[in-house]
View (cartoon, rainbow, N blue to C red):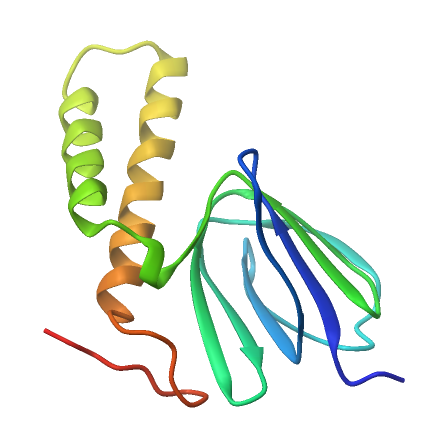
Length: 148
């Protein structure tokens, strides 16, 4: 049995990630799900949060949106509405998106508009959380540069 697996993360805009990895940790409705090579086949939902990829001695952190994951023994395919590596997140744009969403929520909105605006707010908050936690490039496994 192989000790690595193929991780593919696809958003409506592009293939956000496609590499062979040692492990992936997905945010799920019931908590985090760690996946190694040889994992039992599984279809699951992915909730907005932090997705971690371990590849050798490096850990890559991504802000991931809502979606689904298909897990086989050799592959993890994630279809999500957002996937950004920590270093790709524009903190100023995320802050502005959060402000816009909060202002919209203060208005009189239909139920459908509320759901859409809440989803936008959640994406902005996840991006800010990941960006602020992992400000630098990935370093040795389990360590991140924390710049102020």
